[in-house]
Length: 153
Image 1: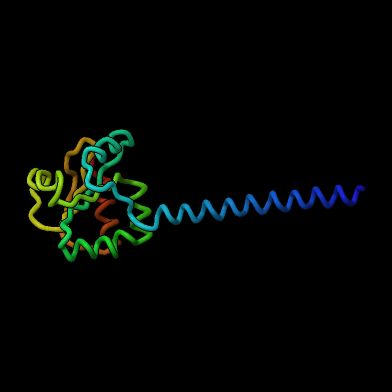
Image 2 (image 1 turned 60 degrees about the vertical axis):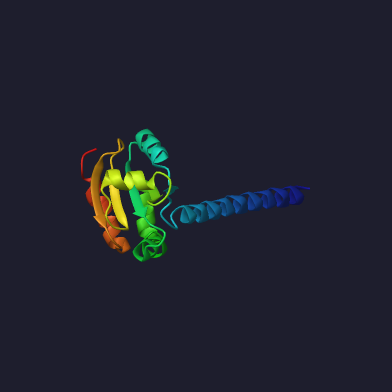
């Protein structure tokens, strides 16, 4: 009887331990998934402003056009870099705006956009803090974001 009890307790402990280990692996996979790419709000400036105000964060805007080659390179190379993804997902509300549809043309005019891609960092009130144009690799994108974060909100 005591041996059966010991076996039962040991089995329960092993099952419990395995479930904790499995949960930890699942959480690690979820964390990797969160930082597999820069996560963007799509074409919704008002939502980005709302989230930035609530979270007291800057807004990073990828202003693009669907026909733009360097814009596609940013999406496929730079925004999928794990280090860039981790940095931008942690520090910014990220917004991807097709500047040729919806509010895009109006915002392009307001923001003075003349080329694509244009990358702009705004404070939580929607005032521009920093901007640049053209493709850049992940290391340069991180530097751009770090520089923008040093500017006052």
